[in-house]
Each structure stands twice: as C-alpha cells, then as structure tokens.
Length: 263
Image (cartoon, rainbow, N blue to C red; front, side):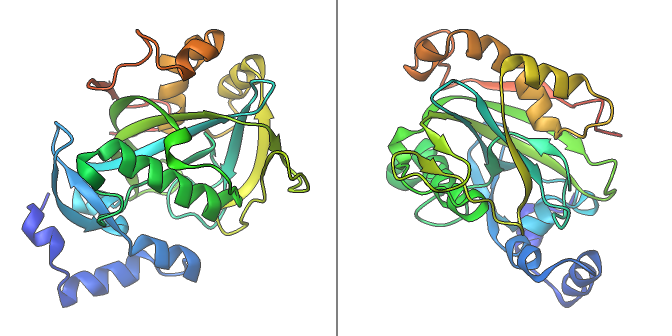
C-alpha cells in the first residue's frame, strides 16, 4: 500500500488508472467516487484524506477509512433495508442496512467541534436525503452506539472492497414508503443509488441472511450477526444508550465476512 502522502497526490498516471477503473461507470457514481473520505489509523484518528475511489480499490491496498451505518426503524420496530443500485461500483444489487456511507474530509464532517460522532451524524443526514429522499431528521436524533473495524472484498465486482471503522447509528421514526405522508419520514429512493427498499422484522431478516440466492453486504451481515438481533429484543433500552449496548469508546474488530470476501 502506498503511504498517506502519495495517496493524497493524484499524478497523471493515477488519473489514467482511475479513468480505466471507472470505465463504463455512470456519471453519478463517478462524481461520488471523487469525494474525499477520511483516512484513519487503527485508533480512528484522522491521518489524511483520499478519494472514495482510492479508498475502495484493492490496487491501493484498501486503506483504512471512516464510515457510518444507519439502522432506521419504523413505528412497528421494523428495519428499513435497501438493495444497492446495479450502477454502484462496490457491492451492486446487495441488500444492506438503511444507509451506509462515509463522513467526508470537510470541516462539517471530519471532527466538528472535536466530535467524530457529530461528523458521522451529519453525514447520515446528508446521505439519507441523497439515497432515500428522507428529510426531517436532525443529526442529534441519531443514536450512536459503538464502532466496528472490518475488511472485505467484493466477489461480484473484483478489484473493489471495504476497509472501514464504521460508526453504528440508530433511529426510530414513523416511515412512509410512498412519500405521501406529512406525519412520517418520506422514503423516496434515488434510482442512481437504490434498486429497492423493504421493511423487515427480525424473522424476515434472518430469512434474508440465510437465503443463498440473496446477496448481503459484508458489513451488514457482520453487524446483524454480532449486534442487531440482540438490539431488536431491547430496542427501547438500546435507543436510550443504556449499557452494555452503548459502548462509545470501543472499536469492535469484526474481521472479515468469509461469505463475501476472498482475502
């Protein structure tokens, strides 16, 4: 893997390689892959920035970077899932949690007021609107619980993968999947980002995870197996950040999802 300084300097050769890597990729995804994400060390301390493209390319060593995962529950405690669009560069047509992306290397999202959690919460608001058309949730409404560190490559789009310290954020609000309600959060998926959405119970999620015909993102599978089913049984306490569920300083090393990785 190249050092952080070289990752920050895009040479002419880099540009040629990047253009080749993105050949045939839709313009909307090309623009997103140019966004700067936050490089971190194993203690989740920022050490620089890198484009989203370089952060997810195995040729660059999958440098460790900061991410977040949102788990949005409706009033009946069903979890909103999305299936990633076919045009996504990484893990296309995989089922995953409500929204998963990255705080950007900006003043608003890197460590605003010295808080990486607030940066992740702000990024969650931004991406929920971009991916799912969800507006009306404020950053402070997202319950932060803990972080995970994992690494996985995508077997269905080789050359791409993830290596992240991922902030886990939960929210429970009434939802309206046709976007017609003024009393609930409207869910209006962006077809450039999302192929389908569905609300699931714990039983339905278990069936999805156990179905060999379905693709599930590695981070979602790891988080589901390690945390979600337990959280679901005590969702009120979890959303209230009660211990032992609230573990803000820990970074759980979850390793790899062997079902989805070829490391």
